Length: 336
Image 1 (cartoon, one colour):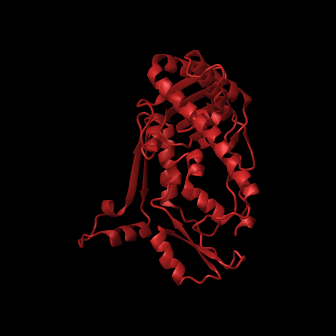
Image 2 (cartoon, rainbow, N blue to C red):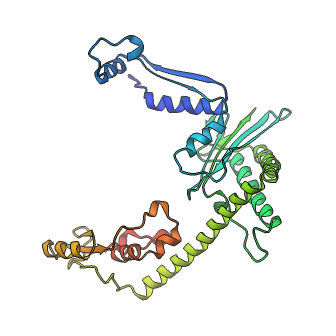
Image 3 (cartoon, rainbow, N blue to C red):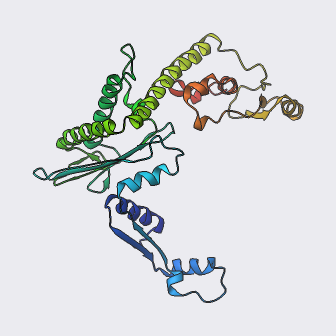
């Protein structure tokens, strides 16, 4: 390449990641390019000539607790946590030149955030180390839940997705001869990594559960709640699908539809309340503009489970008005 422009933000993120993955390591990044100094000088509110130290953009990263601090950092932006202490797992097999570090903590959110690394390389596509972690976690939680009577005999096992709902975890393995697969070489293929991680997680997480029964019960109850919501969401989707088949011509009662059937020319205005709907209706172009009044403050779907979303009257009205279906039934070609 004739010219190469390094991104300070990209390098900064990578330096921070490396500092998290290597506990106790201090990394400092300083941008001494003239463009960076000029930008810093322009942003300064002080009219005096800034010193070189003030104008050079610099960040320093140091994490004494390594990936434990990584998990705390990630969870700090995700609301409350289910248990205060981060679960910390470490093991090494010197004969096979294989080691693993895992830090994990559940939060109250509904999405999982599991990130894996091999020799400090982010394995975006996962691999055998992730497979071992997931298998051990799901098996252990189900066994523990049944032993403690948190799951009844008639209850189905929790799925991996149920168990990992709200989980933030960092999996970091180090190998003597890593084997990377996939088109981008970001998937670990070493079979020994799976069996090693699976064994370590099962042993050490079982020990943590036994030493922290209250926190373990809270984690399992969250998984059970996720399972209940998953079943309810499936039933709600099935109901929505059946209603769509039986009532394909039905539309929300308060929708003031437009005359055109060409979705490239039509638009829908979603307004709050009937009074606003009346005003909008009188000022619209009925050929291409539809009006749908929504009652009150609509549900925040980003923070709600799927079953609650699909049971919401206002959301149901939107689904019917758009006509595209939802989830696996979504088809943009059906847009009205």
